[in-house]
Length: 161
Image (tube, rainbow, N blue to C red; front, side, top):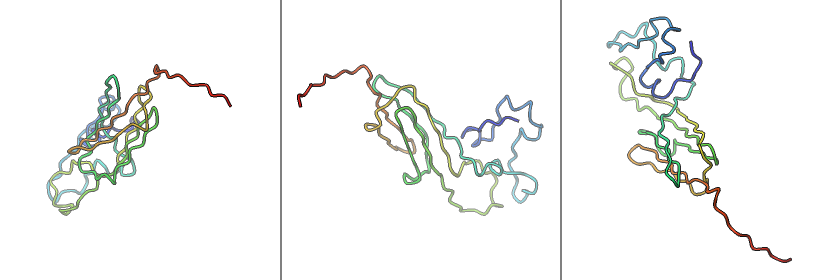
């Protein structure tokens, strides 16, 4: 069995990497939707991973001036989101709180991911931390990270003391 951390998508959908198929017993490859009232011997896909953060999926691309990171964070309140950046690293952490409306035994399927998530991204170039910005629009988090211009030169005026 692989010790690699499952991606947010893999945990969300219950998919298994192809490299894990030969190393796992057959019964672990399939997730069942439990009919109402019959949850006796079926385990939840999150049961053994409740203390592990889900891995957030991201798109990262660059323009000539900046690096852009996008991620779907629908259902996360801004106060439950933490974005920390350095010149070459971005970490996004958050928590999606479940609103319990139905009893556990009344669910036919439970596939949505609830709980904490995180993602750390090593950036391909250094960025200007002070000029960076984070925007949320319709559940999409957009980080705009201006690149540092290492070729930019400026002249220092020499002062006499």
